[in-house]
Amino acid sequence: TAGVETTTGPLGQGIANAVGMAIAEKTLAAQFNRPGHDIVDHYTYAFMGDGCMMEGISHEVCSLAGTLKLGKLVAFYDDNGISIDGHVEGWFTDDTAKRFEAYGWHVVRGVDGHDADAIKRAVEEARAVTDKPSLLMCKTIIGFGSPNKAGTHDSHGAPLGDAEIALT
Picture (tube, rainbow, N blue to C red):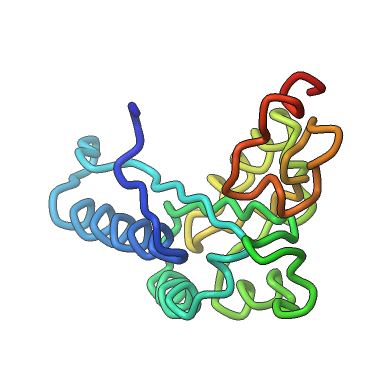
């Protein structure tokens, strides 16, 4: 897929890769860019779900990203409250916004993850902050549009099935 550098399977690995890429961008920009010649000048974007947020690696690398002030790192948090095991309330009760603020991140709360204009505004806000990585907290409904499986873990990692597709 054009523009996609890495896809991962293990939870939390995507944000770890993204932090590494953002470190590379900052390091190479400092080494090679000169006034009027921004040779290295790009953003790194990552997508994270509830399962990614629960993994220890996400805590470690997101703390590092804040410490290093990786202002060209933007992470989208798909906050749908669902993991492969079901609703996350029983095992994931972090205040994610406060966690990331404590790491030194800029946090954009309340982004409607189903509204392209809201997402665009959140990205623009994130890109205006140059001294911190940004977390866009996108509230979504997993399986959005599916009449029987929306908001359930039945739409996580499994096909909807022919009958549900016909209803959707």
